Image (tube, rainbow, N blue to C red; front, side, top):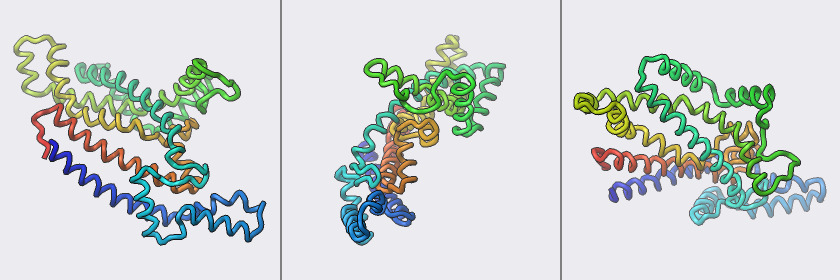
Length: 327
């Protein structure tokens, strides 16, 4: 396994390097000038000569006065050392800027995935056990509806129902405006604003995970060892949970591990619609504001997450099912 991990890590380095070149080149071709964005606010308060000097200073500070190849290797080398650049809009280092949104995204996703697994795994198991029953049909129809509706449409429906028609939850934001809560009251207010985006995410993710669990368990229940266990007179719960579900965990493992890694990735649609200050919203704001240093750093972070998730998933498959050999 150690040899396999080292091989995969070497592949990851190559893929990461190639994708960094492609993304860096892509962002260089996008219209916009980060240096111009940094000094645009001072254009009316200084002379044209002073404005041009400030602009050239900003270009030098951001390294834009150097050839593109030098810019790339300087950026890539700094990134490997933990220096992701400087935001032209917020005027702070990218690493410092991403910290608070990352905490908000992690909090949102942790609550979401906990609720998702608590609901979908039992639901998928029961639907598989009661295959072709009224319960199974109801679950199937509901999950298909959940999968078919885009998440932003689901969000708008939930906002209309639970924030406008029946004003149970706030429409957007993370805190009650002007309330000035502190301590435990502030924490409760934070959770209160968390409820509606989490409900939308759970409903949107309900279908895929439920059907995934149901399908995996149905495959396991059709195996010969399940029929053998039943022939031995074992209780149905023992057959389902000890024999069938344990083997159904093998395909589910990839989904769960990928979800754990995805905790650190933002939901662009949900965070934007609900004004939740997470990394997804930060990415959109950075692209809209032509703050490409921040956007590029976050894209590289997402690439790293995907590579790590794939490696961890393969290792977990091997742990769950010893028959799988890593080569």
